[in-house]
Length: 118
Image 1 (cartoon, rainbow, N blue to C red):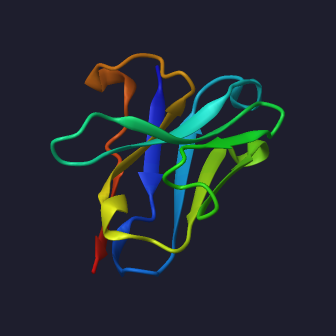
Image 2 (image 1 turned 135 degrees about the vertical axis):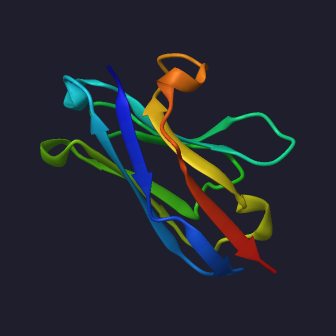
């Protein structure tokens, strides 16, 4: 059973920073490529940052240079450091395997909400 617990979201002004965390209660976390996804109202869920088992990161063009993904395998925790936040970054943020185990709600945690005011 996959258990993903995201935290760290909140309300921040444009230009501000947040650090998201995700504790993943999954087997062999260190061997899995992981990612941070977000879903904004009226839009589909999208991958914003991914990190391989070898710690290689990739980013959506919209967040490149502003977001940094990292992981702590000993803690089975995934992080997303977000800086230079923009109103268009407002969304519910989720972590999951990259690609995800599935798109049904049973494969996702509750997420953490990020709201960026202008």
